[in-house]
Image 1 (spheres, rainbow, N blue to C red):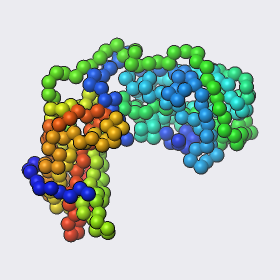
Image 2: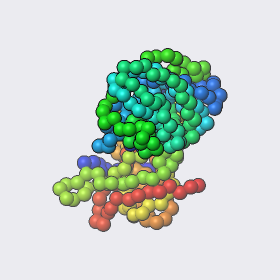
Image 3: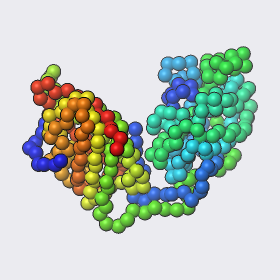
Image 4: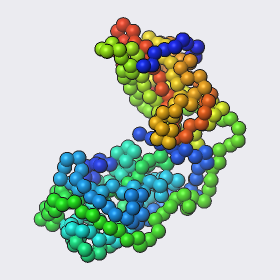
Length: 346
């Protein structure tokens, strides 16, 4: 429901085990004409950080790691389950390393894209300082597939990784290495290989979205406080991952309609007002884009333990450049608490 309101107060990862969302900001998007499953060729010399991998210890452990970003090569046709990565490398290390392993990870969600068994395979072994080493290794994506907004990294590790399988074969070096890579092949560039472009239609568009497509759980937390007295509660519903925004984001003049059906673990005595904002890095982490921010409500009351539906609709006063978030708040009242909303499947 909607109504006008007065002013409401606003006041690296562990070895092979560990690996929230930005858009390209484009209003045209590439759609690959290459069929899946497909093979992506990766040359470690093409990492975004350059052709030198500098290793350091991770999270106060004895594991040495180097994170190598290949997101820009893959984002226009993200890998899917069943695809393969053909990883090429030719490098020189400044120290001896008994063995290095590789894990392919989505740093946006911190999950592996390949199995633990594949992560624990040696990419290269018996590396000697100053002696070139090279090879090719193939991996199959069998974890959750990344999206165009994911950060895909090829993470290298040594010390206390392979060692757990064969400590005699892979003794600990206890040293930080620097490996310089030499380019030997062309890395797959999906922006160039896509072959098809989806262009945003002309005119003002309407986007009908279900928040549950991006967020299954919505957590309300303390917003502003006056000393020890809470004045309001807030939540950020980032809807950038909704399928309607796969290729382009809303612009000035567009309308965004949204709905969420769920249950709440706490009663909320509204009204709950909201704003449409862009919280992406491209927008400087905060840009208000809604034409009627803070003058519309999504609900006047939400019961505890019963199904409810909230909805909203708003035109945009300016373009989204990197994402879209529904930022909602409600004033504190006697007995008020934060709440956890869980979506209810239709």
